[in-house]
Length: 123
Image (spheres, rainbow, N blue to C red):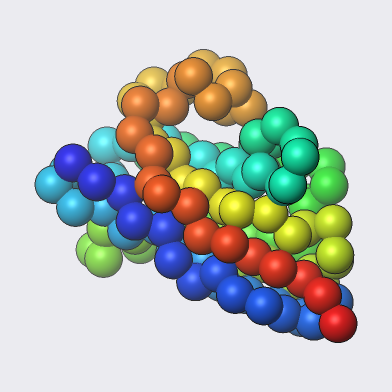
């Protein structure tokens, strides 16, 4: 059972990136998915969530209107489209999966975690 986050890189302020979270060994259809990030010297923070039931989504205020989460169950993958990136978005981004998550912003609710992908926003 493994989650693989990818798609990070160096981008200029105002640019875009799309992160992917691919699952192996299990089917993402049955799991709620969250994206978290951790900037250097800071605690991990919740970024976004998508439900398994109706693909309803939620976003942290800091990314609302700029980031979009989506899922492609046929590809067993969840995406995080990030637009209008800012230097403060620089962090390692992690995807996580869990079942029947109640409080989407709390990391202990999620059972499986990917290894993280680094996003650097800098000119």
